[in-house]
Length: 481
Ligand SMILES: [Fe+2]
Ligand SMILES: [Fe+2]
Image 1 (cartoon, protein in one colour):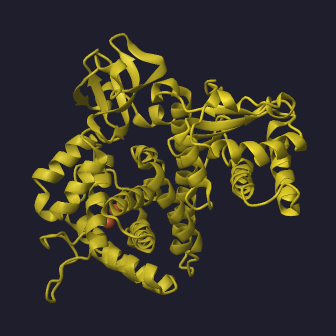
Image 2 (cartoon, rainbow, N blue to C red; image 1 turned 180 degrees about the horizontal axis):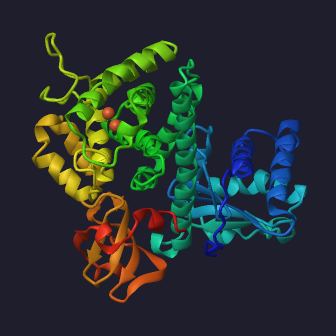
């Protein structure tokens, strides 16, 4: 009685599936309270039945699964917080204790079968201490034989499709949110350029979506920040800085309101640049003295733009401060130069300062005007530029982006070229990579490899390599699936 290895399904919303999970667990819990003749019980049973039929489309069995705290309806990962759905986490815990990983219903399940399941199987059998899954094959075949309990897979290796599918779905959802953030930032910047009062509620909402993704799976978001060559870099830079800042904030344990303010402030840190000449912002060559003089006005212009064009609240107040302070530097060597008693930049400004420098240096938009590999930049920031940054926060950021930050191209001991996508928390030097080439050239189909898994122990990272040297563009590899 093993969990099925379903073919991979990609869903964007999973709204119906989430509804099914909610109704299922509510009824599961209520079945222990109500008699089967109770009208509430009957109504909820009908609801679950209807959702099962809708999702099965009359042909596919429907399996509800709980895997490592994540929920699936068949192979679709469903955003479902068991701790918030009263009783769901207790039920899943009870399942786990008994070796149950889920339950599968036939496509054409009837009301009677479902009613019988909830009345007798969802309650009595699971309450006995001496549990034997073989017992779950009903003594009343006509009624419950077609409903199957699913066992918990013995090890993660036995559910590669599920783990892989989760990863893919996280990445797909992260991309969607990242793209939406880009669109909203673009809208707001265009609005700001025309001097309009800014409607910033959309920005606040998208920051909340970014937080949701980062809390759940920061790697999928960090991976997208590795694309530095967007046509309009300013928008991508704003989103990147927000994603990095939020990730640092999450690691610091900031609460939700502060994370929201931090992400928001990060998005608007460079808003002052809209007041500067377009040619200056997009100048391909190194800046001369006059260019720098103008560029150094953007923090003050940013604070003014925010205070003038946005309704004043805690978000805009923090954003104004972030914009004003993000180039001051911890040792006050930056700009603007303060003539009053020097006050240490606040926490948000210090975080934004670090992640802003990292993103700008990797993309080659400042100073050297050429792209740099992430690991060269972080090393430089830690050594030559360390006095500019808060050492504790820089250390946290370095740990987040890892030994080989997402977007690094690395040479493996097998003479293969691989792109680092996500870090493995427990094995920072053995990230999740995509092999893009070998000694014969680029591969037609890239290969995903978790370097931390024992089967890839023979693959070790030798050193990072510069993608430009190979004429490669990391964006192509990140977005090619
Ligand atoms: Fe800036
Ligand atoms: Fe910036």
